[in-house]
Length: 194
Image (cartoon, rainbow, N blue to C red):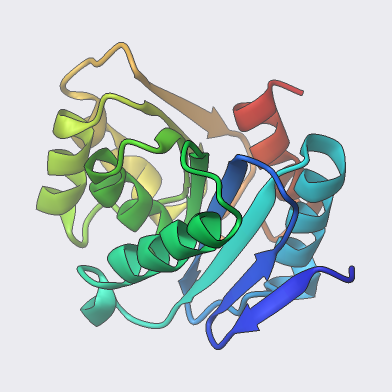
């Protein structure tokens, strides 16, 4: 793809569109992802949905409070350069990135939807819970039933919210080890209903 911009730990797949998808990896994940999964997802979203895609690698829990804000600064500057003042974002996060997406999305009016895949519930639970409580955007949680956090789902579903849904996938572990194609299809299914 010609229009890829690398900014250290952020890769931008550029199209001139008011729609963007922000993806946070799990801790230690690269901007490409295992077997190029984020590259495949981003390329698909660019081609099928004309969305700019921003993939951010998460390196540690210590940056939990700063990484989301830093990514949003880059994205706001990106749209400013395109002279697009009214953009909307969908945010996807995996593992720690999924926790961060839910915990921080409510702070930004541009964010319309959040897809949190196998978020780590037991670390930063208070921030996750606070994000759920304050959020007005659609939050979709997806857990594999073999993911260690699946047993903590009752902690996030104890308060029913009309904008929050939880799906549990059978025979799926934390890394989607035997379910690579299923993982690739998640953003399209939950963001675009396909």
